[in-house]
Image 1 (cartoon, rainbow, N blue to C red):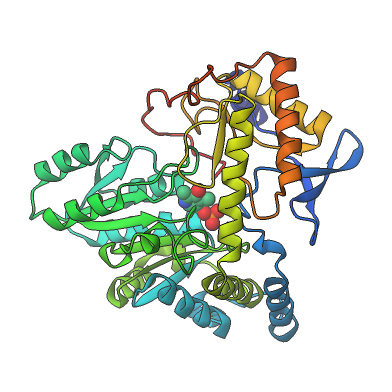
Image 2: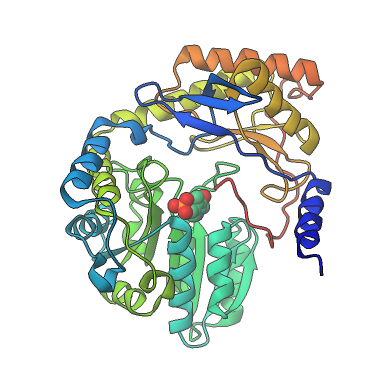
Length: 425
Ligand SMILES: *Cc1c(COP(=O)(O)O)cnc(C)c1O
């Protein structure tokens, strides 16, 4: 038995499907974000990152770094155990209080990542409800799909953001059956937003529970960074709000917030919470500092929105096919996996601009794209440089521009997700 052969064949398969991924070896530079050192082809060079999920640059914020250093100096590097066995540090308790307050909920529970929080919480909630039916948006993130699968509960997938389809599924299940609706607020590949109020109305009408992933919204939307549910005054109408500490908050970890009873149940039953070491004090203290800063400061949110808007305008004015997006996410259509990869290689190699290609299965075939995430630190000059680099690349590779006078290309048919997880996240 040649074991290695199976791994080789598996990787060959990924190559054949044109979705083999290559990591960029980066060193982020505090004070110079979004600049980073890239190492490749035996050289090290300075590049500009245009695809970071450190959406507000909080990963280099002085208060956040200071909190991390101070906690590490005082309490050491690790947590020392699981939450049950000596791992519940005081900074972690403070962080959970901060998160419950952020979303106006009774309680919060922190996990080692956003992925784990979705996987553990969705599966546990659905398992604790008798004969639960899960209603899941077709574009939900891989971590939610894992949670749904692991719950063992029956699931129905509703068409993306399609409340009529959701209602027909709820109606068929009836008011009496336990039902959990799982969806996201901001969908990170298209940058569109769920009809949260309508989903909450349906949940009320059919007596269903609601679980929202606000990973791409926390820190960035709402007066205190509580996400789209805060911005729209809907947090109290959603049962469970989930988020990450690793994107706009610039650190690491994930969480859920909800009623004290629900949080206590997940805390008591979820293996992905119970049987793993807690996040270390330095990380949790840094996350708390970041959340506290963004509760008070609107400047980062305003600057991010301004630069995202400017990037969309500047790229569209150059005829680049900017896809419609209601948020800070700026997708630019390439429409072919090979070209998408070549464009990214050229941007990095020739222009020192790093954007990861987004190909199938993360997005439907034919909608391969560059996913650009402007931050407050992407200056007007950087946006102009990006435009010039994209135009050079579009010309050199013969990638189609947007049709004159039309907005960029519409989304094509949806695929039903996804046995293969999204990676981009
Ligand atoms: C990134 C992502 C997650 C996972 O969060 P991590 O903290 O990175 O594990 C969950 N949901 C969505 C929609 C994401 O994009």
